[in-house]
Image 1 (cartoon, rainbow, N blue to C red):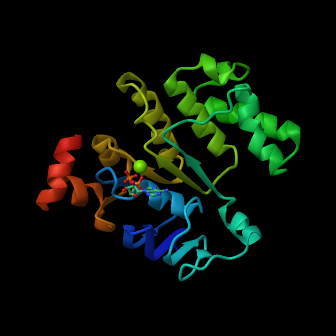
Image 2 (cartoon, protein in one colour):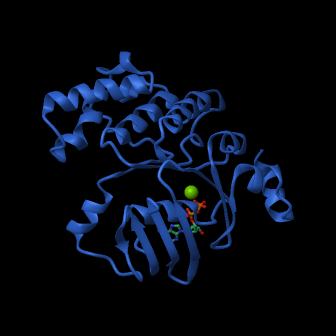
Image 3 (tube, helix red, strand yellow):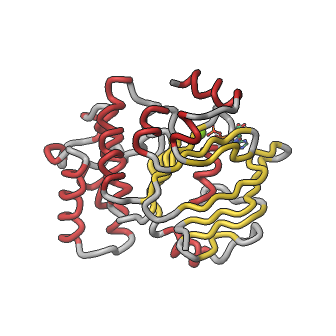
Length: 247
Ligand SMILES: Nc1ncnc2c1ncn2[C@@H]1O[C@H](COP(=O)(O)OP(=O)(O)O)[C@@H](O)[C@H]1O
Ligand SMILES: [Mg+2]
């Protein structure tokens, strides 16, 4: 069973058909890089997978359970149960500015009654260590650099111990000298066998880290395959033009 199965997904905003017919299977442990021009629906696709956008048609099946079937959704309670195991990191970090780093990390697991407070606190320490920020546990978000904030945002998503982590352009809001530290954290998560979908313009990073590369344009997946197939040995002129532009 694939960890995510998407069949004939359709999504419009009014008259604008953003996702016309998207089908893809994602396997456990896949690192999927999603490339494509701005406005091609990459964010809409990721947001659909975690119910931030309601789709108009098609199926989204996560770990064997339908989040949407023929565009029809189950109850809120059922949706929450299905999505409990999916975490998302956005381009903008959205840390809670009035809470220190430890509290930022502990908030969602406490609300979800994931574990005892003590265990959640230990998990926060462990997770911060994973992103290389153990020394920042008691500081406020405003004292961190952009790269550090994004690493905390990644740690916060990991606190819910997701089976699937989605990243929407995790480095595009960062100065170039700060992207490396965030890509390193993602690289390490990839090595741990997590299942991850990463929308990125970092073609080099996608080639190195992903085992599956998706190119989206005009509402369709125009190409899907290994980095060699989709990036290195690409013969489609339009896709090559895009790759050369962002490289
Ligand atoms: N909530 C919305 N309402 C109306 N149009 C939207 C909305 N969200 C996205 N769009 C439009 O859908 C298209 C795809 O957007 P998006 O998924 O953000 O693309 P990408 O992430 O690939 O840049 C764009 O034309 C965008 O303007
Ligand atoms: Mg986007």
